[in-house]
Length: 117
Image (cartoon, rainbow, N blue to C red; front, side, top):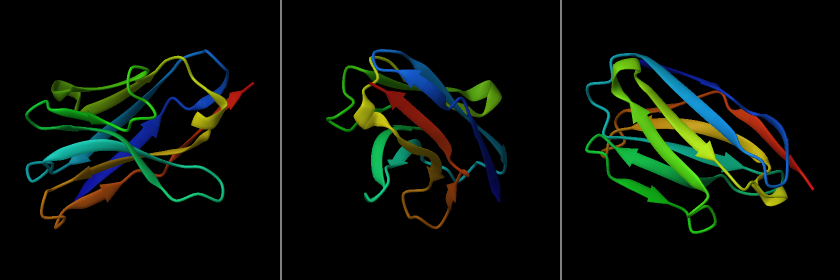
């Protein structure tokens, strides 16, 4: 079992920056990828970015060039650096760690990001 704890959300003005953190505890040996999703009111949850255990990254088109996902293996932590934030980035951001088979699939509790115009 893996527990995920997110932090770093908040209120920021458009153009500002935030860094989200997702710290994992428990058995992560079966995990292949770690990522961030977001869900805005009235919209479906969408993938923002993910990073594999080999360090390969992938981003949604809407955040390319503005967001950076990274990991710190010694701390079992994944980060999402968000720059040049826009009001449309406002959402609850969820951390997810999973295996490619989806047999192991863990989610954080979510952290609110609000970008004011």
